[in-house]
Length: 180
Image (cartoon, rainbow, N blue to C red; front, side):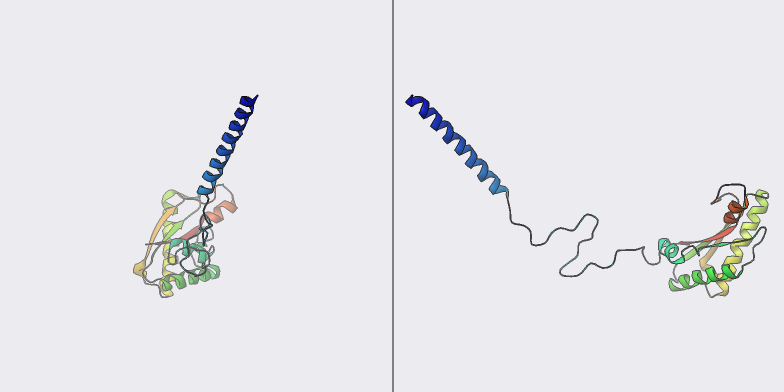
Protein backbone atom coordinates (compact mmCIF):
# COMPACT_ATOMS: atom_id res chain seq x y z
CA UNK A 1 0.00 0.00 0.00
CA UNK A 2 2.84 2.33 0.48
CA UNK A 3 3.38 2.40 -3.27
CA UNK A 4 -0.28 3.42 -3.79
CA UNK A 5 0.14 6.25 -1.28
CA UNK A 6 3.33 7.38 -3.00
CA UNK A 7 1.57 7.43 -6.41
CA UNK A 8 -1.31 9.41 -4.97
CA UNK A 9 1.12 11.86 -3.40
CA UNK A 10 3.05 12.20 -6.70
CA UNK A 11 -0.20 12.71 -8.56
CA UNK A 12 -1.21 15.47 -6.13
CA UNK A 13 2.21 17.06 -6.36
CA UNK A 14 2.01 16.96 -10.15
CA UNK A 15 -1.44 18.55 -10.05
CA UNK A 16 -0.21 21.23 -7.66
CA UNK A 17 2.82 21.89 -9.86
CA UNK A 18 0.56 22.15 -12.91
CA UNK A 19 -1.79 24.50 -11.07
CA UNK A 20 1.13 26.65 -9.90
CA UNK A 21 2.54 26.81 -13.44
CA UNK A 22 -0.87 27.88 -14.80
CA UNK A 23 -1.24 30.58 -12.15
CA UNK A 24 2.28 31.81 -12.90
CA UNK A 25 1.51 31.94 -16.64
CA UNK A 26 -1.70 33.87 -16.08
CA UNK A 27 -0.04 36.35 -13.75
CA UNK A 28 2.74 36.91 -16.26
CA UNK A 29 0.12 37.90 -18.87
CA UNK A 30 -1.60 40.44 -16.69
CA UNK A 31 -0.44 44.05 -16.81
CA UNK A 32 -1.23 47.29 -15.11
CA UNK A 33 -4.23 49.22 -16.30
CA UNK A 34 -3.19 52.01 -18.69
CA UNK A 35 -3.10 55.56 -17.35
CA UNK A 36 -5.34 56.69 -20.20
CA UNK A 37 -7.88 54.57 -22.02
CA UNK A 38 -7.89 54.52 -25.81
CA UNK A 39 -10.67 56.49 -27.54
CA UNK A 40 -13.97 54.81 -28.30
CA UNK A 41 -14.36 53.64 -31.90
CA UNK A 42 -15.16 56.59 -34.13
CA UNK A 43 -13.73 59.21 -31.76
CA UNK A 44 -10.72 61.26 -32.74
CA UNK A 45 -7.81 61.08 -30.31
CA UNK A 46 -7.34 64.21 -28.22
CA UNK A 47 -3.81 65.40 -27.44
CA UNK A 48 -2.82 66.30 -23.89
CA UNK A 49 -5.50 67.63 -21.59
CA UNK A 50 -7.58 69.26 -24.34
CA UNK A 51 -11.26 68.60 -24.25
CA UNK A 52 -12.82 67.19 -27.41
CA UNK A 53 -14.53 69.87 -29.47
CA UNK A 54 -18.07 69.69 -30.76
CA UNK A 55 -18.78 66.88 -33.21
CA UNK A 56 -17.38 67.56 -36.63
CA UNK A 57 -19.94 68.86 -39.11
CA UNK A 58 -19.55 69.42 -42.81
CA UNK A 59 -16.31 71.03 -43.97
CA UNK A 60 -16.90 74.82 -44.09
CA UNK A 61 -17.25 75.98 -47.69
CA UNK A 62 -18.17 72.51 -49.00
CA UNK A 63 -21.32 71.49 -50.86
CA UNK A 64 -22.43 69.66 -47.71
CA UNK A 65 -21.95 72.88 -45.72
CA UNK A 66 -23.92 74.83 -48.33
CA UNK A 67 -26.79 72.32 -48.27
CA UNK A 68 -26.82 72.23 -44.45
CA UNK A 69 -26.88 76.02 -44.14
CA UNK A 70 -29.53 76.44 -46.84
CA UNK A 71 -31.89 73.89 -45.26
CA UNK A 72 -33.82 73.60 -48.52
CA UNK A 73 -33.15 77.14 -49.74
CA UNK A 74 -30.72 75.76 -52.33
CA UNK A 75 -33.81 75.09 -54.48
CA UNK A 76 -36.39 77.57 -55.73
CA UNK A 77 -39.70 76.62 -57.35
CA UNK A 78 -41.69 78.03 -60.24
CA UNK A 79 -45.29 78.08 -61.42
CA UNK A 80 -46.31 76.36 -64.65
CA UNK A 81 -44.49 77.84 -67.67
CA UNK A 82 -42.98 80.57 -65.47
CA UNK A 83 -39.44 81.65 -64.66
CA UNK A 84 -40.03 84.79 -62.58
CA UNK A 85 -38.46 85.13 -59.12
CA UNK A 86 -41.17 85.60 -56.48
CA UNK A 87 -40.79 86.78 -52.86
CA UNK A 88 -40.04 83.28 -51.50
CA UNK A 89 -37.44 82.74 -54.21
CA UNK A 90 -35.85 86.10 -53.40
CA UNK A 91 -35.49 85.11 -49.75
CA UNK A 92 -33.84 81.79 -50.68
CA UNK A 93 -31.52 83.47 -53.17
CA UNK A 94 -30.51 86.07 -50.57
CA UNK A 95 -29.40 83.23 -48.29
CA UNK A 96 -27.46 81.68 -51.15
CA UNK A 97 -25.81 85.03 -51.95
CA UNK A 98 -24.75 85.49 -48.32
CA UNK A 99 -23.12 82.06 -48.28
CA UNK A 100 -21.41 82.63 -51.64
CA UNK A 101 -20.08 86.01 -50.48
CA UNK A 102 -18.71 84.33 -47.34
CA UNK A 103 -16.72 81.95 -49.58
CA UNK A 104 -15.53 84.15 -52.47
CA UNK A 105 -13.43 81.40 -54.07
CA UNK A 106 -16.38 79.01 -54.42
CA UNK A 107 -18.16 78.61 -57.72
CA UNK A 108 -21.72 77.46 -58.26
CA UNK A 109 -23.84 75.90 -60.96
CA UNK A 110 -27.55 76.61 -61.13
CA UNK A 111 -29.50 73.72 -62.62
CA UNK A 112 -32.78 74.58 -64.34
CA UNK A 113 -35.53 71.94 -64.39
CA UNK A 114 -39.07 71.57 -65.75
CA UNK A 115 -41.91 69.12 -65.25
CA UNK A 116 -42.69 66.36 -67.74
CA UNK A 117 -45.27 68.30 -69.73
CA UNK A 118 -44.17 69.92 -72.97
CA UNK A 119 -41.61 68.91 -75.55
CA UNK A 120 -38.02 68.20 -74.71
CA UNK A 121 -36.87 71.35 -76.52
CA UNK A 122 -39.45 73.55 -74.80
CA UNK A 123 -38.52 72.22 -71.36
CA UNK A 124 -34.78 72.64 -71.98
CA UNK A 125 -35.39 76.29 -72.95
CA UNK A 126 -37.65 76.82 -69.91
CA UNK A 127 -35.07 75.22 -67.59
CA UNK A 128 -32.43 77.55 -69.03
CA UNK A 129 -34.63 80.62 -68.40
CA UNK A 130 -35.20 79.48 -64.81
CA UNK A 131 -31.50 78.93 -64.14
CA UNK A 132 -30.63 82.30 -65.71
CA UNK A 133 -33.31 84.08 -63.68
CA UNK A 134 -31.80 82.68 -60.46
CA UNK A 135 -28.27 83.55 -61.62
CA UNK A 136 -29.25 87.10 -62.55
CA UNK A 137 -30.85 87.64 -59.14
CA UNK A 138 -27.70 86.40 -57.36
CA UNK A 139 -25.61 88.77 -59.51
CA UNK A 140 -27.96 91.64 -58.59
CA UNK A 141 -27.20 90.87 -54.94
CA UNK A 142 -23.46 91.28 -55.52
CA UNK A 143 -22.25 87.78 -56.38
CA UNK A 144 -19.70 87.86 -59.20
CA UNK A 145 -21.40 86.44 -62.30
CA UNK A 146 -18.17 84.78 -63.41
CA UNK A 147 -18.53 82.40 -60.44
CA UNK A 148 -21.96 81.14 -61.50
CA UNK A 149 -22.64 78.74 -64.38
CA UNK A 150 -26.05 77.59 -65.52
CA UNK A 151 -27.23 74.34 -67.04
CA UNK A 152 -30.68 73.17 -68.10
CA UNK A 153 -31.85 69.62 -67.66
CA UNK A 154 -35.39 70.31 -68.80
CA UNK A 155 -37.57 67.38 -67.81
CA UNK A 156 -34.71 64.86 -67.81
CA UNK A 157 -33.97 64.81 -64.05
CA UNK A 158 -37.20 64.83 -62.07
CA UNK A 159 -37.06 64.64 -58.27
CA UNK A 160 -40.66 63.49 -58.01
CA UNK A 161 -42.10 60.78 -60.20
CA UNK A 162 -45.75 60.98 -61.07
CA UNK A 163 -48.09 62.67 -63.46
CA UNK A 164 -49.94 64.91 -61.03
CA UNK A 165 -49.74 68.51 -59.84
CA UNK A 166 -47.82 67.61 -56.68
CA UNK A 167 -45.03 65.90 -58.63
CA UNK A 168 -44.99 68.57 -61.35
CA UNK A 169 -44.68 71.36 -58.75
CA UNK A 170 -41.60 69.69 -57.23
CA UNK A 171 -39.95 69.31 -60.63
CA UNK A 172 -40.36 72.96 -61.73
CA UNK A 173 -37.24 74.23 -60.01
CA UNK A 174 -33.76 75.75 -60.09
CA UNK A 175 -31.16 74.12 -57.85
CA UNK A 176 -27.88 75.76 -56.83
CA UNK A 177 -24.93 73.38 -56.43
CA UNK A 178 -21.50 74.59 -55.31
CA UNK A 179 -18.40 73.31 -57.04
CA UNK A 180 -14.73 73.36 -56.07
